Length: 143
Length: 143
DNA sequence: CTCCGATGGTCAGCGTCCCTGACTGATATG
DNA sequence: CATATCAGTCAGGGACGCTGACCATCGGAG
Image 1 (cartoon, helix red, strand yellow):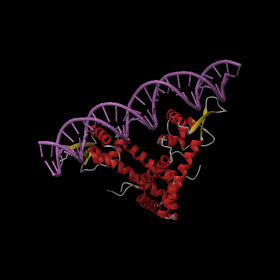
Image 2 (tube, helix red, strand yellow):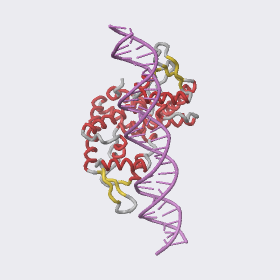
Image 3 (tube, protein in one colour):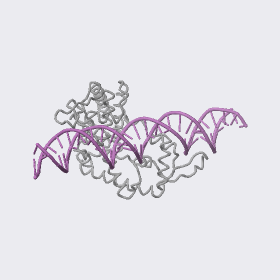
């Protein structure tokens, strides 16, 4: 095979972390979380967010986001509360069960980062992250 | 937001290249290629490959691979020929139209790589690629 | 204050992609 | 030649995201 393109190598790394985190979350007993639910759930905070904003940030339609929030709500990861400033809107806020999953996911991310640091050395990992961050300036169309 | 995880930065880079290549392919008149078709088509060569092997390498079931090969065949990107060494099997070989798309895709990949080299400098890009390749040793479960 | 266009959100229906399970036909091995 | 194995297809279903149509509320212009 030809020399793999850097983007393919990036894809492999990203996929690995996704699977590690997903595995940890399932092992911790949150098997009812699908990848799609997890993607929108990753954007939640205590403050609450509107479905429309959630959709925009997740780059999906508000209809799709609405369905995913339905599922997250049914599984007790989030709650919908009325927006006190706008009677049309409702805020999606993270629930206790949602906070638990976030903790599990972040712990696994940190674990992977430690493994990478052991494998490459702290310096090369830092350089790698720096270069990726610089590349983001020309590859990330959304900020 | 917290400091983004390196894996997120990798994902952004990989997604960018995927969209660039996909855009170039569509602009070149191959709009009937879906992402799923492209993913399996990327593993084709002159020698031919069995649907079962294609499925395994693409990490999808042979049923899914079979459907995608159907579509690729209908759109003239590949042909199915009998396997001379096994009467049960048929080989999926790339057709002229398939070779054309591969050329377009590779050209766009090289273009992106040049842009990245301009942005980071050849040395940092090489170091980035090296580090990613080393990381692959512990993140790529499939060789 | 009253319109009326813009905005937040849902409902209905559809297409793509990938899966599982069951099956057909050909091959290899005893 | 009986049987286990292998290549591949058929049938059906679930997850995910899209478009289009619609309703309620908001907020600025007249």
